[in-house]
Amino acid sequence: MSALWPVELEKPFGETEVPFGSFNPPWSGVSSDGFRFEQEYSLVSDTPVPGRFYKIKYGGGGLLETTGRAYGLKQGAERLTHAQAINSHPSNIKFWRPPGNAFEYKYFGKGVISFSPRFTCGGRKCFATIWIPPMKPYVHPFLGRGIAVDSFNEPVDLRQSQREWDGESSSGRFSAGRRIDMTKVPFRWICRLRVFLKQPDGEIRQSFATGTLVGPRHVLTAAHVFDANWENDPATPVEVLAINVAAGADGLRTPFSWSKTKPIDWRSHPNWRSGNFDPRFDFGLIRLPNPPIAYRRFSKLKNETLSFWGNAGEIDGAFLLPVEILPEYEIRTLTGKTLNICGYQTDSNGRSTLLPATVRSVSPTARGQQIRQLISYAADTSQGISGSPVWYWDEKSKRRYLIAVHHGGCGNCKTPPGLDGCTTQLVGEDCMSDPRIGVLLTQRVVRQVRDWINEDYDRTTT
Image (cartoon, rainbow, N blue to C red; front, side, top):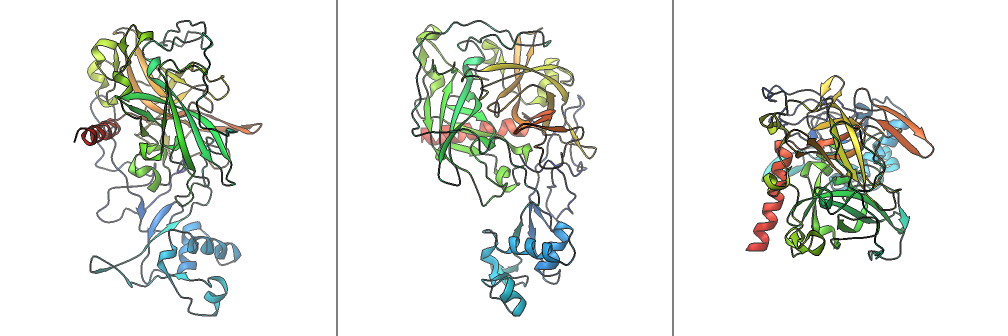
């Protein structure tokens, strides 16, 4: 989501962060096996750039000049319009001063951003940090879809359904149309997410997404499932009211029951929203209510526990490891290999769909520079698959490794693609893009997920 078109920024002194895809910093490490170690990135620039926060400087030009530098505009009505948008943005109003001349009274009558060093912080002078709105926002296709609803209750279908086992893919030769036994590993850990969101007009609608049970009561999914906005603007968030989570759902049937969660139960990476919804940070965690569903025993499992992905991996063969460690398991590269994606497409009657994904690149490029936190692949995914697990089944060892969290397509037909080789095509009202991309489970991502789980454990045990 967002920032798929990299822009060059000057690196502020003392900060180690750069925009998505701008360049490979000299401190980035590359292990001997070729897997890259990701670095953290900043969100504040010392030059005005759309979709970033800008530290204004006294003597560096006023609002109109700053606007022109940010959007590449010379004098004229368009520059004034963008300046008014910057000035009236909710994040910037706190920096207003009263208008001081006829021009400011006419076009900025309520107040205008001060570019003088009159702000203080911690007893010292400092400059305001204003938000420069994106010029062409990237709106994720998840938003604004779904159907109107009157209730958050989970429907139940008591009819029994015929099930068939559908093997995982290591070669791509299997029928994606066959039914999946959702009581088997790893499918029973794949969760259908029924998302209830409030439209700008006040109407409540429901949409669907997918997640993976990776802790006792913790579901890994894409951050944009619950932490999104309407215009790719931090000040205009989508109001997600509730998410119903059903592990191993099969159509309307919920063999392992379902849980209703509220906004206090969701967490996304701290750089997701403040980074203008950068797809590199499109992952988050949903916490289900107590008691932990993973430790519950179900008759459908012959009174065994549901468990979760990464728990007792040596027994169930499902590992949650950083991709940098894969060479230790004799997986030297993922490029060209066939992965599995399993999620709940919105047009599949609520039943999960298992799809093959052929890896294009473990680190796709933008303007020739590698994006180490993403993985690209060819896969026939659609709406509802967001947040799905992307895993590799190793036929030799009979083990499966969680590789990524599915983000979506590489573009949205409304803005220039950022990734090299990304193609988009508008088919009816839907935008088809190739390749698809996911957030790699690097050391930093896995550590963040485990920290979230551990923090939750510490709170519930103290």
